[in-house]
Length: 107
Image (tube, rainbow, N blue to C red; front, side, top):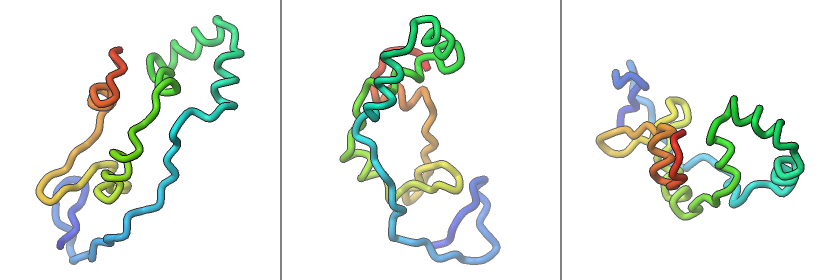
């Protein structure tokens, strides 16, 4: 199989694709120290952080689907930040991730 560049142009030489997926650490929940820091924070500070991160702070409140993540790991191309399948690429966006995790807020 020929490797493709991020811009879909074939590379000059054939590069053998590695079938061994990269090793990842999957966090099942927000670390307790981070939650304690957030919960102990004064409302003013939370508002300031919210101004910069928006609803991204809600990520601390959900648990990822470990099985889904493990199923997708072999398809992840970390050099281009895309999922590569046999005949197409999928680039995750915050809006798409919001749909998958159903936060119900605009990211």
